[in-house]
Length: 187
Image 1 (tube, helix red, strand yellow):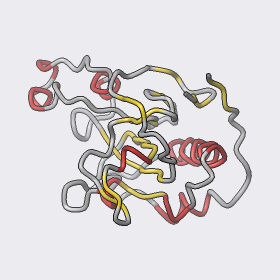
Image 2 (tube, rainbow, N blue to C red):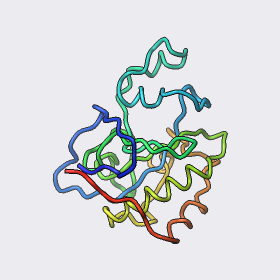
Image 3 (tube, helix red, strand yellow):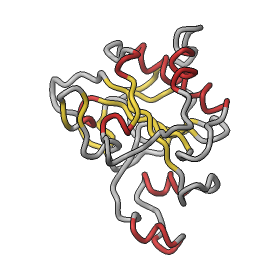
Image 4 (cartoon, one colour):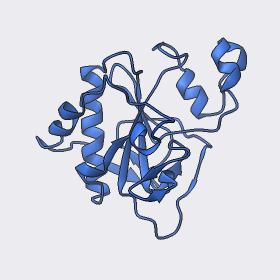
C-alpha cells in the first residue's frame, strides 16, 4: 500500500486487490480532461471519487456513473494527485491487452495526464511524470522502458490517449538522465 511522497492524496473507492502472485510490470500513460478539452476545476477528481455531478455539464450525464480511477493524476501545472496506492489495482485500463495478457489493471500502474489529443502537454507535466516514473520504476523494477505504454497501446481501436501531442521520445529520453528524488512511504 504505497503512496508517492509529495503527492496530494484523494483516496478513490474505485480500486481493489491485485490478484495474488501477479507482479506489477507495466506503466500505462493516459490523458483526461473534463469536460473534454477543459482544464479547470476538479471534475476529474470528482469522477475518480464517485462525486461527479450529472448536472455539472451535459457531457457528465453520460459518464457520472462510471466507476474508474488511476493511481496518479498530473495536472497541467505539474501537481500530482494520487487516488490509489500502487499496491492496489486501479480501474484505469478497462478492456485491455498487452503482449498476449488481458486485464491490464491486474499488472499495471496507471498515470493520467490532464490533457487531450488536441493540446500539447506542459513542461511541468513532463517533469512531474519523469520524476514519478523514476520513483515507480525503482519500486517496481520489472517496469522496463519497453513496458511503458499509452492507453491506446493496450486498448487499440477503443482509446487514443495520451494522443499524438504526447512527446514519447522526450519522455523516454528523460528517464535516462538523473535520478528520482521522491521517497516512498506507506504501510
